[in-house]
Length: 216
Image (cartoon, rainbow, N blue to C red):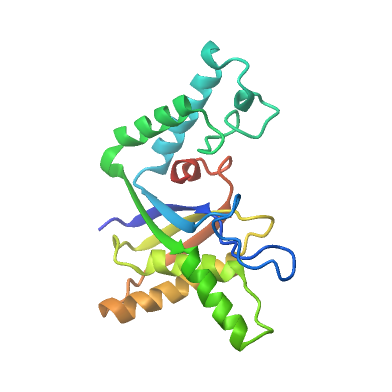
């Protein structure tokens, strides 16, 4: 049982269900709107080692003449020059990042929960029929996935250090803390005992907290 577990949380897709215009209806599956919303956490045995290796790889690529002039490598662009991000990186870059992660083997463990947005949209539509004043809150979906992600039986430790990738301008520390408290209660009800651990939560961005780049 490790004394502390370090995990890094990021998302894929988006929790959007409805168009911005009033009455535009469900837009799930349309261009620019994903069918699924995924929340993943990467447990890292040695965050310093992973961050050092990722930074060294990125700096090495920046110094490689092969990538000279590539748009995503230009320092004025908030892309590969500042941090790895799957959507922004070239296939060659993504391959090298995955290769590095594979080499770290069992020191990394990834878990994810997936929300089917078609199911969510149906549920929300029915809720609105019963309550016309009801409003869909994307943060509720996000917090529910956090609760599912940490309420399952994964490794036990004395303390958990959680870094969450920032969404928009708000860090939502209080809401995330409440979601993790719910996860603890879910865990106790499901497995019959508590983890009796301390939790440390920090909202950050991938350029500052390099290990979040690996989760992405």
